[in-house]
Image 1 (cartoon, helix red, strand yellow):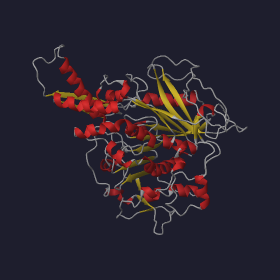
Image 2 (spheres, rainbow, N blue to C red; image 1 turned 90 degrees about the vertical axis):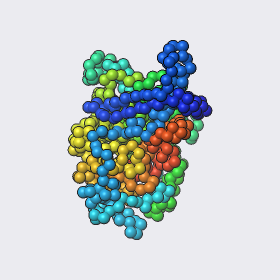
Image 3 (cartoon, rainbow, N blue to C red; image 1 turned 90 degrees about the horizontal axis):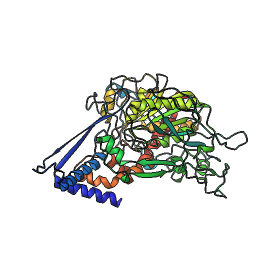
Length: 555
């Protein structure tokens, strides 16, 4: 951190001496392949008769230092380029969240006059309010179950070869961990088979392994030997996460001079493997002493295990997770873990706009081609037959979600718009989540574009979904549903991401926040999240809602 801080301070000084300004404009004008376009422009008030000569090393040094300052600033700017999917044709503003026109009658309200959850769902009167008395400190945990005797979720890291482009695309995969008839897990070897051509070029040679496992292998604390490989000594999963400032500079302004040493690698622990440490049961009197005892019992095995020894499912509901601009395949890992725990097969690719810089960007390689190849491999190589399909998108990923699949697909749009650039909305099941505290995609603009058939959900209603499901009487959700967070501590644009991903981002970028403030540059919700740290609280609402919605629409 000291190196980054000193470098940032030097950039401020050099930029002041050089009196240079450099602006970066990123317009996420998505074409059919969902590729954002970035342009940059620069101007300088410095004039010198010797400027431009090769001998003027001081001038060159000051210029590059000022440019480096612009890089740090552009990383933290408040434009919609960093994470947001922002169709340019939508009008600014729109009706405020409290007054949403024809949609104000379509709110699911859960009456709680006596503090108990009412399983009945009714539409509210015309005088509705989006404010909620919900307190994050008293929020109910979305997962209320006894720890299993063995892990229930398996994680694999795949490498999807895009041979015609000469790159391998990392893909995270979560799926139910099912033991064999003997009670043991089995080792599987998966190789590539013949599959379709995409974008021309040669067909991938069969027989190439497509699984990529982390080299770090460790067993559970209850293990008696460090090298055991039985189900009593489970190999825990970890996520290899990377943040590349070089890639951020490339995506925002097309700069290639930022060194890779300012990037950082992180080893993230799955959210499920830590969640029982901070479960709060004080918010509800509905839970019995037996349930509390079950929730606080030490786990025999962790939830998410390394899937190298876990057999792949032959069929099941498949969910694609599409990250946002400068996002990561682990952005929604906490949601994928719970979905896999409920029987879903989740896949999350690293798209070209990722901040990980895990492979070079190639002309013609876009989200559509990667997604098509993934589903080809899923059926041809992994021998998995999807029984139903869904796609969950965050920010820019909402554009991917709306352009992927047909009307039979279920879609979840998080922190994005409900319609495409041409104003068309998906015809199948859609769940939309937005927030009045989103600094990238305003709730007002979302509501102005929200089709009238959407039914607004209320937070109090959402908080009872997990409880209703545990009671065996899950509440039916509308096919077109929307949850608009509207409270002082509502989620910001990155609150929806996994806590580990956000903490990694804050740990690397927080030293640059003072630089942005000194230059009077707005920061895209990084400053909000640094104060709120509300990923877990947001997940307490989002995960039960998305899980219940997908189970209803897909199973």
